Image (tube, rainbow, N blue to C red; front, side, top):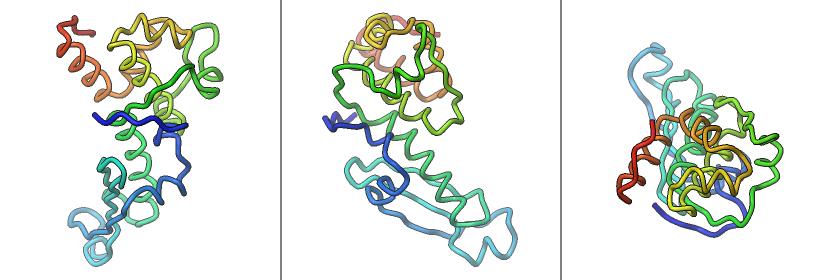
Length: 170
């Protein structure tokens, strides 16, 4: 898992910044969508140039719609695969975490950035939810609840904890 030390995690990039940071390939795919889908390259595969992280979307009938879906998936993949160093919680985190409660819907555009920040603090605290939650000014149960909203994130957390002979979280 690569560590980088930018001002912002790549999951926080705007659509235009993320498009610039990625190489896009457009492909045809068979399946639902009829003749249009079989003749037009509506499928999108994105590769983040700096990290090699990939995302793809093929399920929509238009290339533009698939690009939006692929960008969302790229943000989530970057949140899961890239770690950054942070001294304190971001303004976005402080805005979304009030009275030690994290308020975010997993479908919201801010979710990947908050997940990335949560994972960054967990990694910095040797995957200890209590220590990370303390630095993020929330409860450990709120932190774990946020992570559980992305199944791959809880798998990552448990994988890292197992590598350190720490107990599995449910």
